[in-house]
Image (tube, rainbow, N blue to C red; front, side, top):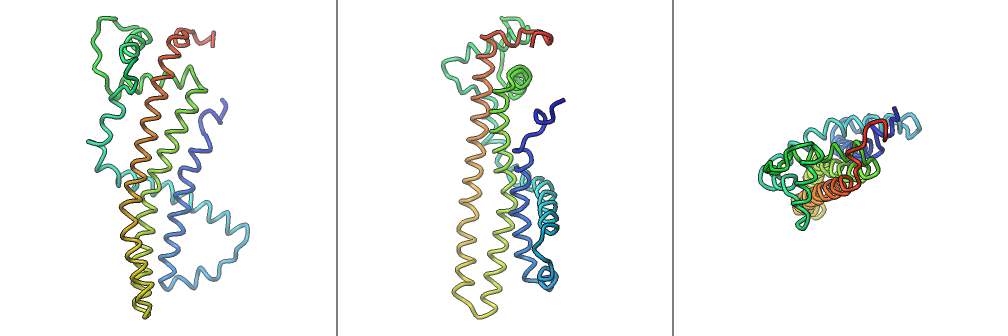
Length: 229
């Protein structure tokens, strides 16, 4: 089995990069505590770098669960229609016919398109059209990366507030207020921008999946037996 077909660099970086952002944010917060002296004793060498990357990856995996929770509030309304619609206005009937034929359904059966229908189409594309599957996986990976960045954003919002209060307490009113105002004003627009781009990735995933499914059906790729592949 080729491991590259089961694991791609996007799968790794979708957790590593948010993990690095979150770990740096936590270090910035902890630098305001008595633990700052402990970090000052660490040397910048190869072993420390490897340890930092390992901790960051674990941080990314753990924080991804919190990131998913953070966007759950807008799933029922905002995302329900993305995978339950067919964005190919001129080929909806062709998609229905191809779906019935690929799954050997009665051509007279009425189809109420749903997520389950989309997932079946995507599975067929992944199985029989691997080059197209890689393009679709890229959209899934980019969406995962953006989603995983939501929790680090919250951490850096807390960093800005904490350092702002710290500066105010140390008689630096201007910089303290600047940090608080900037952090507060950026957190919501940044979050909304990430959510918007996530939706864009999901729409591209749906469009590329259904386009590949229709082309693959017309080319007879779903009719080939395993030994003919």
